[in-house]
Image (cartoon, rainbow, N blue to C red):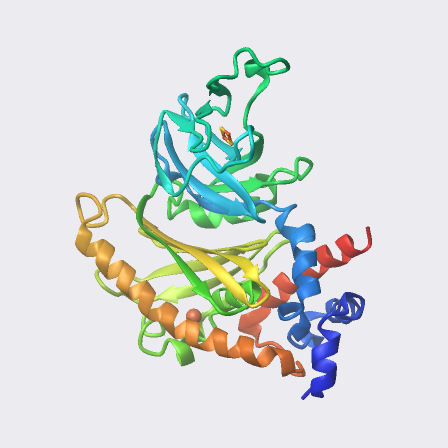
Length: 376
Ligand code: FES
Ligand SMILES: [Fe+2]
């Protein structure tokens, strides 16, 4: 146990926490204990994550099947920066700032299909490609040049049907970093799926508590005894070698609900995208996004092969799938929110289980990024 005075003061000293993290990261997996608790509770670390990670890395905002047609769009927020993801006339996906050039109003909300984005404030309009289309009463204004006005564009890359954006113009491309994962995904054809459902859920925990929970299947036999364990037994879970950009573990699925026995995988694409895939039918993914040090918004999506029910994805399948996911996520929610409550006074002393090496790998990635940012 920490003494409570230390627990409340050390949480705000980033230098001290980073020193602890450096010492943590110098241990091999075999010698490591679980990560310093302050990483999940300190406001200073949360602020550092914003500059070191969320403003620099490729962040998943959704799937291509959410926007199949020209004019389809949805909004997203990355590191508090509001975005419109839209499919242009020629089929290209673009990410624009969701900020009117005139006086900063938001242009779009939610999702839909449109030909133009029209500002609710003074009705400036923008084409799908972000160029200005019209600006009422502005034609005679000195210094106004309609042709030079366009929405700021943010980098966007599609990978395996996922849409990622990056706020850093100088970041390396995403795809090369994920090459080692593509082979595993190929047999599930995850780039050619249809959306089953999409949800947003909030949890009272740090975003990393949630990500780490998704990226270890050590807890299945205990937390998901009747939901997941019967289909993918913990004893068959095996962590595979990851890389600088991702981690991966394997599960062996028993036959269930008309699905044959198959091998499945759960991958984390750093920083905050976790993907469960395998067999020929499905994909479940989450993107935990920090709202506060102890509050996380999760976008959760399930996609399937279009012919899952022999003729498109039916309502019955959507409903069943949504209910099943909600059931096991409520099992997770209870645990991870209780863990978060204890973290301010929890002192790590114990090693990881082999089936949690994914989380040690994630920690190595995280600490490296935080230390590099702090050193600048
Ligand atoms: S703020 Fe958009 S038109 Fe004025
Ligand atoms: Fe779980």
